[in-house]
Amino acid sequence: MKILIIEDEEKIANSLKKGLQQENYVVDVAYDGGEGYDLASSEKYDLIILDLMLPSIDGLTICRKLREEDGVKTPILMLTAKGTVEDKVTGLDVGADDYLPKPFSFEELLARIKALARRPLNYNKSQKLVVKNLFLDPENYEVKRGENTIVLSRKEFALLEYLMKNKGRIVTKDELISNVWSYEADILLNTVEVYVGYLRKKIDEPYNNEKPLIHTVRGFGYKLN
Image (cartoon, rainbow, N blue to C red; front, side):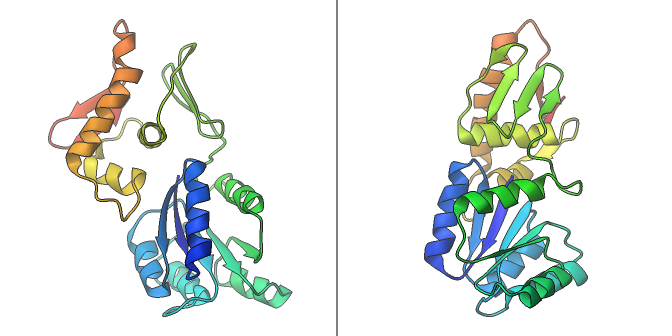
């Protein structure tokens, strides 16, 4: 799951990023409203955490533009020091999906994120993914093939999760970079090849009596089916 944080208080933004990465989310951060809007309108995210008071473009304007002008349906969790009923109503009216006043606990933020992820229009993070006898449980960070538990690194897990969410479809290397690595990461195409190789060694090679699940589509990318 890939999250964009738009928050001008760098200490808060960096703390949230670190905490969410420890929960196995891929996280991008923008410290300015203009930069945040550009990322939110051009990149694909599963959730946007949006501060209300921002330099350049405020959170309400960003939210309104994303919904009305760009047609972005990504769930938006709005953060603000303003906690009045009127502020909440205004935020929800312009298209925010949830509203969390500051200060807040990280545990509450995490619970709100998981609640938004369970909504029908978004990927259900609590739902297990299944491809043949390969099972992935995003909530409990668990992967099995048949009865065997497979231990993956965080990046391997994120890569497999994205491939399984898009099972049967060709996924390009550029798409994997955009959705599995953070925006500021300087990732080369052969880095994707290396990590796909890691996955094959754990997902397919030990099960050589069964058909492989990860396939290379030469000139295009990868497909899991």
